[in-house]
Length: 69
Image 1 (spheres, rainbow, N blue to C red):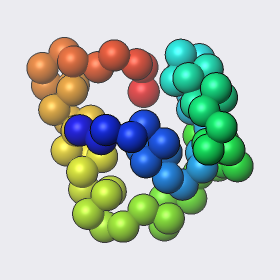
Image 2: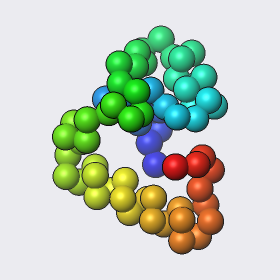
Image 3: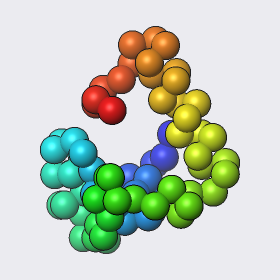
């Protein structure tokens, strides 16, 4: 999906999942400023929001969710 994991977190958010948060904490270029619940959705483009919704539904439909919502 994305080859550079810091691009995945381009909006500098924290993660709900300890495994993801631990990974990003170790990346020198990733400095979170938003908690998951405080993240403002308006920072995402309409396409990014649609992609997140599609991926979430896909994961639920096929039992592919690796981290809880």
